[in-house]
Length: 287
Ligand SMILES: [Zn+2]
Image (cartoon, rainbow, N blue to C red; front, side):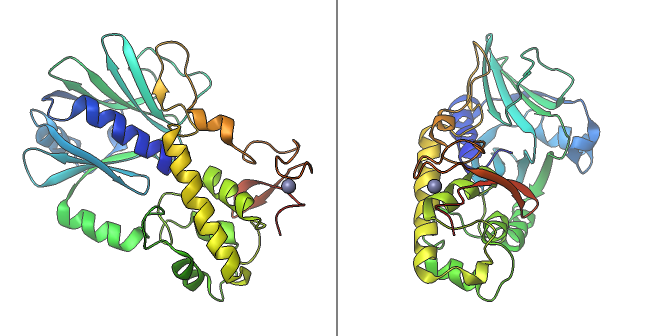
């Protein structure tokens, strides 16, 4: 699943490409991928321009030059955004081993054609992702209700996290994955941060002490910053050649490394299920 660094990379890539380009056409291949009335969706977007792109947690927010609506795109489990221009592709989001570079393909749910003939496709294998128009007010309400602080903001600190964890029996990993607690951390970066902080992912959140919370918050920020620098773990990348992975893949210490030696202590890493998700951890370093 694309997490904060992957979505941030998409924002940065697309800002350079599609801002202020006139949207010549809007293509809908799977009407239910668009929440709300698809006709209104097309009417508002066609002929319009994206004036800015941002994100909150894993939610992409496209501001429009005309009208007060914003286009929201959530990639969920398997969403990808693929920008194509003059035979070159920039793909961001979920990696697929068999990424089909002929677009649109059977996983393409919607697309935008720009006046310069560039196209932006929304692909989604499992179809949990969505596109939706929302007024600024609706968006503000939703962000307020469903999104905790950004992990790289000052509001996300050890005191905040300890308060959120107080007396909670939920696992510390489950707490990090809860977007209402902190917005943008998913399975990969939760496992990495917990390993870096030496905390067993299944430990009850309420039993993580203040010193460990400090470590966990610092590790989360450091790892997310580094992952953004390396364009994420999935293939946020130019894929003129083969679908490439974001470079952070090479820096993962536990995620996807079960049964391999811990890079900190040499003990074999284990895989288990915590917070409903496959979880890799080191039984020697993490308590
Ligand atoms: Zn270890």
